[in-house]
Length: 62
Image (cartoon, rainbow, N blue to C red; front, side, top):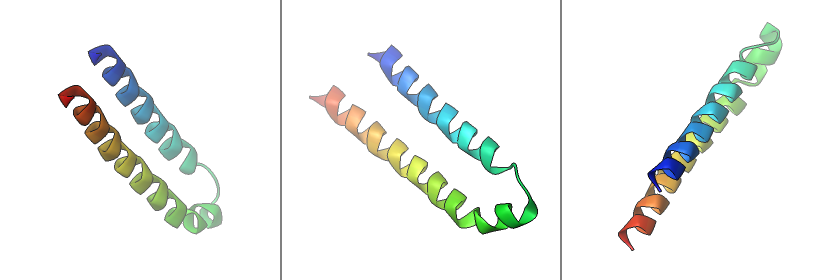
């Protein structure tokens, strides 16, 4: 069970790092135009991490 939680966390972190790495590439106009999208993606990842952690906690408590 602990291994699955570590694997899930690793996949989430890898996705976040990949998203941030790809968003840094490109020209200035593209970067400035997509800054809002990047912010929303980071917030989605953070929210997803909270929801998944709560779900795993509830699952383990039952």
